Amino acid sequence: MKVTGAALPFLPLCRRLLPSRIAGLSVALLKATALEFAILAGHLLLYPSGIAQERRTTPKLPQDTAQLPTETNPPVVLLHGFIDNRSVFVLLRRSLAQHGRHQVESLNYSPLTCDIRSAAELLGRHIEGICERTGSRQVDVVGHSLGGLIARYYVQCLGGDLRVRTLVTLGTPHAGTSVVPLANAHPIVRQMRPGSPVLEELARPAPGCRTHFVSFWSDLDHLMDPLETARIDHPDLTAENIRVTGIGHLALPVHPAVATGIRQALDTARPGSGATPRPGGLTVA
Image 1 (cartoon, rainbow, N blue to C red):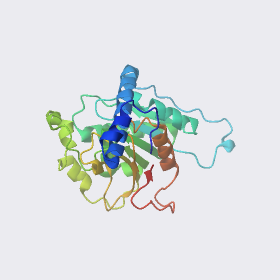
Image 2: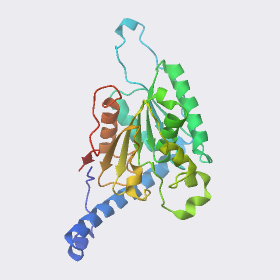
Image 3: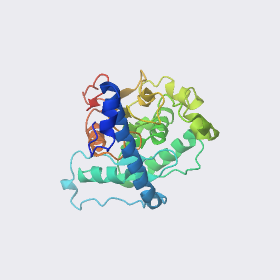
Image 4: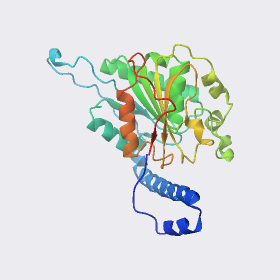
């Protein structure tokens, strides 16, 4: 997945001073870092708009039920990451709506949340409410970073595979991340460390899990250490890992190319559909 844009003024100097292979990586890293800062600045402006929970509405059904489609897409639930809120999904929501996904809801969990298990229980109640209001039996979930881990815990450990048809995760530390050791003061950060009790629960056998998993992981994600921790590698889960090249952690829920990949993931490979996950995932260059 290649990010394009105007080259930074000092990139030609990097190419002259560094070997070509290292220079290429440096150029990509510089571009990705510049994009991360731009996204962070924009997100800080939008952040206040996403603090409050969004209003819940019941979709209006056509008067003539005979005109209802025989098969409709389930609602999509968006779940943000650590110390964030639903405003991170403004562009993704727009993309989904433009391509026929009109039932899209976000869940804000408190920035004071200290336990993945409690957040997963809250997600479960939220999804039950959506199903009751919309009449849908299942939902699709897209989780960024910690949000993906919360959704996975709900699916694997709280029976959420009955409700979640497809779970898409974006830069989620499925195997734990070792970045920023000083952040261990926060309990939920400790739960995202390799070998934590929560991650050990997720590593246990999960026979018969009905949810289809799709994990987008970036080769320039500065919050994943090691980078491959954002992959889902579990023998009992139907999972596809999609490597994203050229962008960082904050860009995953924002970049239009990733949004296209998310839509494709929601519209294809389902358990029992006959679709076969692509071995080793897909590298988009």
